[in-house]
Image (tube, rainbow over all chains, first blue to last red; front, side, top):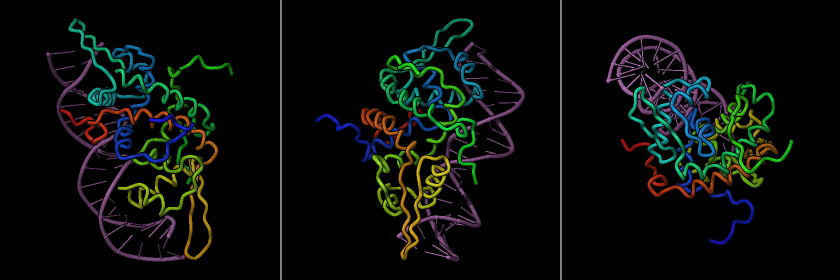
Length: 121
Length: 121
DNA sequence: CCGGATCCGATACGATACTG
DNA sequence: CAGTATCGTATCGGATCCGG
């Protein structure tokens, strides 16, 4: 494979589209941001860190990403129970993309960041 | 603003989350990929380029992104009518992020690219 | 050619209550 | 602490018909 000439982006083959669907969902990216840099977090830590998420959505999206091979779930059989989550290697490889997204999101105009999206008309 | 030490990612403030919601939706990223590099595309071009999308979804997501300031819509009052779409400056600034996402998506395991997502259990 | 309007089913989401 | 179960709603997404 020759080196990429700066930016390529154009095609977006079927396979790529399918892969991108892993990131779909109200909370996926937010969770991934929390787990960044190889951080290991407990369920309750994530719950506290992500304001507004419900237990149901948190566990649901975590389990999906686990199946998709993005995060790893570790159960410690203790009392009280302890379950930790962290990114897989492939999940970690999302790092550059997430960082770029973060930069872009930070550059969003104030109206957007305040929560008024396509609600103009 | 001092330079970032490689990767930062961690916090994901409220505003960032709101901005990221712009990219939510089944077709948003796919459309953005098509419009990449400042390309100007007609409605029917997009429709043909994105296999599987319906007119409704195409127009809906385009209009939303227009309101969100990511794409621009240009109507040429001709017969037959011609409407063209392209990225705004802010939309263009998504370029690095999309490219990084593309690289990541391409590195997805075959099972993912074939369309079997969290459908394991 | 572009795209609005409407109908309809699927599923994503959210709040709440309950369990080992 | 870390989930499950249930229910109601909102939004998504596709098909189809209609109009400038």
